[in-house]
Length: 241
Image (tube, rainbow, N blue to C red; front, side):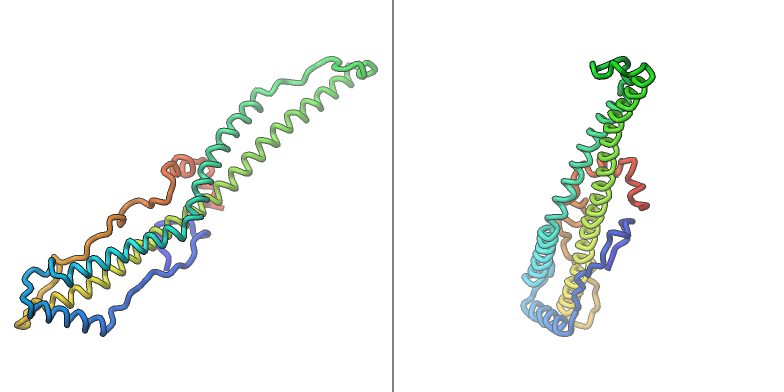
């Protein structure tokens, strides 16, 4: 399953979301738990051992899921961090090279060595121009190389970032599915507990707790990613490539 929040289709891969199935055996266990709780005289379901146990299991699952995904994405997180830092370094380098290129002095004139005494003024002028073009060309090549590296690093970093965001979305989806599963178990327990005379009730007020990390920004993305990468003038070109 994939999610739709990111638009970088080229880097997205099919990943499975954990989808627990509420089996008849689960329903039977939950119904028995509700029956035993009713016989024990439980009057506050939200503080019953069974309900608190379900909440604890759900939160433990959520924490283990987050830890597992974090461990698996460790190398991707490092690459994104290195990519952001390298783009920042290249931005500084490119500005410095552009400054040198903009202020590059014009060709010198006259003879620079005794060995040039046999050359005419026209020949000297051609030599000085060629030397100037070669010197300026080396700076231009340095600039072209820095820009090419920046585009390459930017593209790779955007792709790695898409993976992090995708995995964060899928972790949320897995937790949502798990919440549905434990919610179904809770519903069966409460219905049996509160239906001594066949009275049907809903469990709207008895909901599973929300893990602390759910709904928060992706923690694996460097804090300056938006400033360095998203605000880059080449970012849209990378997405369109």
